[in-house]
Image (cartoon, rainbow, N blue to C red):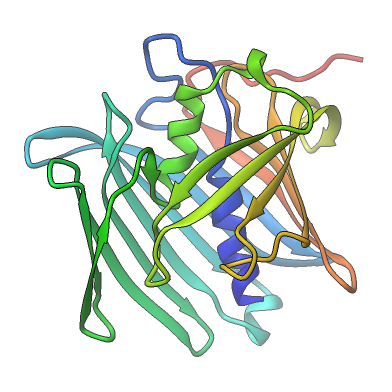
Length: 259
């Protein structure tokens, strides 16, 4: 279960929108997702956009939280917080915080990005170790990747079977490659009604975080918001699914398909 909570944040953090000279989201945007395994409501996750500054640079401050609830928390307690500070102008990450408490598994990590020196310093506060990384082009953290993609990729340029590539840094394992393969469009039923979506297959470097052969699917709304609507991970027995369960502060109207 532990890695599927991380999966939830990784995939929830990837949407898509067109670059039009201004951000397609704004402070106050709040998204809530319900993660369930069969009939069991396993956890909730939220993403909240705020304004802040780092060293005088205007940044968005996004706080992501994940927590098990109800019956599931009896068997596996999760209380995770992810924070990302990234530039309002360039979308570059400047600080990333990951505080994880999942059963007996705990992490307390802070990454500070220095783009002038092309380096990042990862501070593992539990092990009291610091790691240095050389930054690569278009590097993103786990959360900033979502908002970077929403502002920097044209949906009209999507080609079925082709993938968008990103490099992510969020843990001691270092920088890894992430791919988002476009599978086409699909209309899915939600608690809000039918929503037209882009459909993607997230892939990561084999042997790092998750395996490429795992069957993961992401549906992103085809309206101007480009927010995640559903994520599904097919397992050997059953499937884990996360659905959009609440939203507020969207910059654009959430579009529902009329029958």
